[in-house]
Structure formats: structure tokens, C-alpha cells
Image (tube, rainbow, N blue to C red; front, side, top):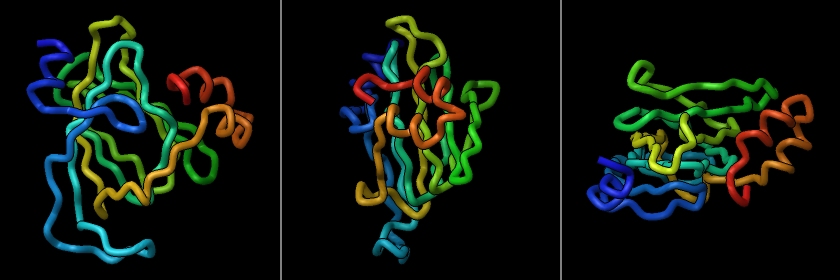
Length: 159
């Protein structure tokens, strides 16, 4: 089964950060945040393939990642204090949490055209595009010059 199969099977649409997604769960229980009422949790399926990468972004909520299929993902994050971390999400390491306020991006571990990674992500409090911030990799590199080479190495197309 290739990435096209999973995109069609799971009815995934293009995501603004890159890749494809579909929301699969929204908790009925509301949660008050400084930015307004949100569901207490949301979940999506998310797919990256080939040389595609997610753009650098951050959320106002924690995001948990769960590996399902494919070659896996490499994720890079930068904490609010400027610490850079690299993570791998694979069958051998199937779970990762990116804390609220961290800049992060993801890329498929292998860069062949047919390689892909299928994951699920949960966000608590639940995801709302009002809590989602994209940043161009050049601007992020200027903010964290000590990590500029790494930030630019995983840059997303257009990001």
C-alpha cells in the first residue's frame, strides 16, 4: 500500500502546513482557554510523502504524534527558550509529544518519491486554526541563528 492508497482510503485533504490530513475526532466536552472555548481534544490522521515536509509552525496546545505506517518521520522542534531537539517517529519509537509553544516541523525519513509516513495526532486542548501559527524558515533561522543551518536544512517547500 502506497501513500496514494492511504490518502484515498482515509479521505485526506491538503493541510496548510504541508502534507495531507483529516480530522477524525472532536471531543464533545468544551475546554476554556485564554483564546476562547475549544474542544477538550481533537485528533487527525496526517500523511507526508516523498520530499514533502511540513512547514515550521507552533500551536498553543500540546500535540501528541502516533506512528502507523511507512518509513517514519524526522521531527525537529525548538523550545521557547531556544533549545533545538531532533526526534524520530517510527515503528520502534511510535510516540512523541511536542509541547505547546514549541516551533516544529516534520519530514519523511527517506526522500524517495514513494516513501511516506502515516501518523495520527491528538491536540489537547483541541486544535483550532486560530491557535496555529506558521513561520517562514528564514525568519525562524534569523530568530535562532545558532540553529540556522538545521532550521534551513529541513525547510519545507515555500516555508
